[in-house]
Image 1 (cartoon, helix red, strand yellow):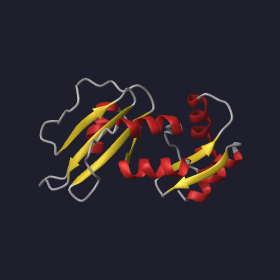
Image 2 (cartoon, rainbow, N blue to C red):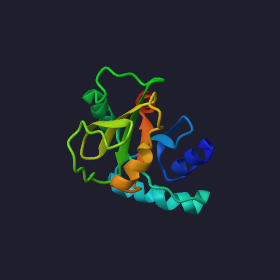
Image 3 (cartoon, helix red, strand yellow):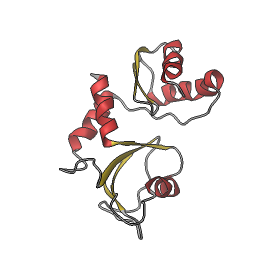
Image 4 (cartoon, rainbow, N blue to C red):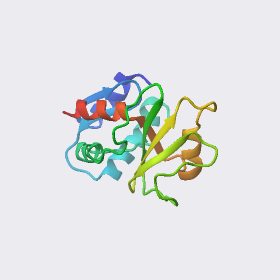
Length: 161
């Protein structure tokens, strides 16, 4: 979906200072009042009505993203050609049945940290088998999740100001 179309929907819903961050569905905006679940529901009902697609919408405030960055879930690791740092955001509470760090059997990635609503994974991109992080995450936690590289999370934070 084109970024200008996503921004237009948000602006039409009354959100202010609407901006997009790269072409991955990240939208930054200001909204006066309203609970996150209500704002998510408004957006989720607008997508098919205005743009013809359905999508789970997951919100995080600037304060929430800043708190995640302050956790330093990846320690000193850097996102690069050998390590792929991924933050996964859940709409609801994650039913985590393991303690990080956790390496799923026969996988080339590790869950290095978790909160009630986020998981942080590091993939070894030098492994012979390409890790299927997204497939594993959906099997474990369902489809009301979305993942972004750690670099993208920081881009979103910078856009928020």
